[in-house]
Length: 320
Image 1 (spheres, rainbow, N blue to C red):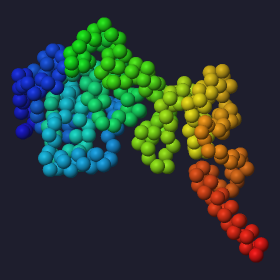
Image 2: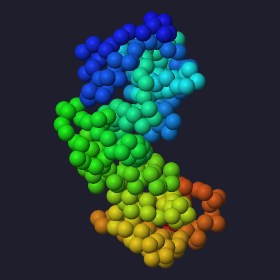
Image 3: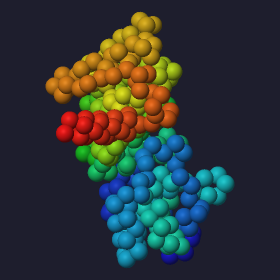
Image 4: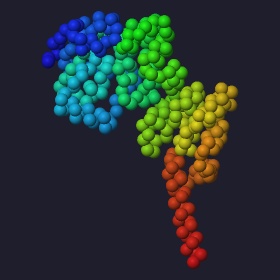
């Protein structure tokens, strides 16, 4: 199918099933499908969902090579004649990696806020959505809904139930499966410095060798200033640990009282956590001169253990 070849889908039942409201079905009648070069499609600005080069992407690329893109991406026309991706960033990248000349697209007129809402809703259906992705996605959608005056015609669930008297956060909760309080927690994460936010994602990805932090302590830390977060980050990396929920609450409390400083943070972080295996602790300044600046805590520990093993062998040899 060549660029610009339009197919009227206004009466196509299968296509209408993609839309949940009469307003959207009306818009569908002004939509068309065409093949577009990926070079003419820009990514959605501030797109909160990461397109990862993981095993799933590898499988998608192979599928696209064999069968093409089976489900068209959704784009909207821009004033300069180009197109902007709304839903389908992974399929676009897979098409590029598979070296396909074009990708099938549903072209649809959308306002900025309409595009944000559809972009968020379509991506939240992924099998795995990281905490950072939910954080910025929920914030973008709620901001868009508030700008629309809390309209519900573009956000009603497929069942068509009435949500007109609910607030934006109630609507998002009803559609997403996350409670209002959980949505609030996710949105708080947008106040974290990137390095701390990555640790929350690591708790889902569970990559070896990466510091991981649970959602609840991360929410508490989101109330710290950026300077306080960076000070905490330095200590976390030095101690090779993240705070428990109780420790995070204590750190936030000291911050709100204006008493938080690196010494206080270190003292809290060195507290033994519940059910924690007893550990031997040594002030870092006592051994810092033996290691280059920035040496990871795990490497320092391994080096000390090896040195002690060599010392023990030497002592035993001298006793013989």
